Image 1 (tube, one colour):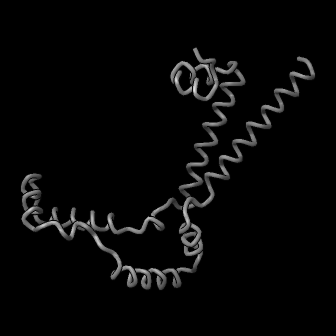
Image 2 (cartoon, helix red, strand yellow; image 1 turned 45 degrees about the vertical axis):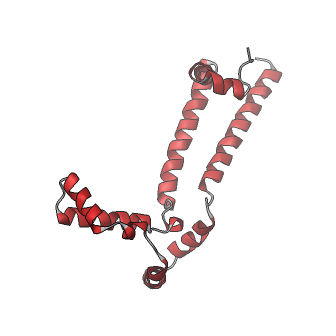
Image 3 (cartoon, helix red, strand yellow; image 1 turned 90 degrees about the horizontal axis):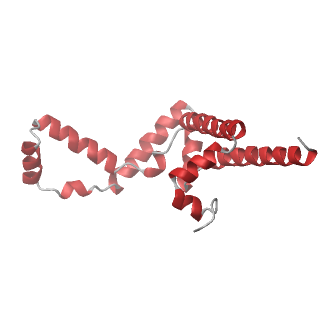
Length: 161
């Protein structure tokens, strides 16, 4: 192996590692404006967190609206009979859908533990791709071109016909 090809290979390895680290950092950054406040609120002590939750729920009670409140009772009864549900089951379904519909999207993002779990899998997949490309001579690129020919052409991985 010549010195030039060895340095080209090591340069590609550094690029791959840099891109992998960049992807991990970008993935772990907050995705929306409210996530920073959510992360700060998660760091508050348990007593303060309970107080914060009580105050927030009291403030949100007046402002949350749900479109399901406008559904007539007759329509809900017809749906309940069609799906052969008991009144208790229908009440539970309506309550669950209202809770899901009025949930604040700022507070429904992933926890740091869930983000770490996803990053571990992402890193493992990237390492697998790197090892396959290294050991089997760009097999992942060949597979990508065979499975997704239009996308490979758009990305410039193959010459257009």
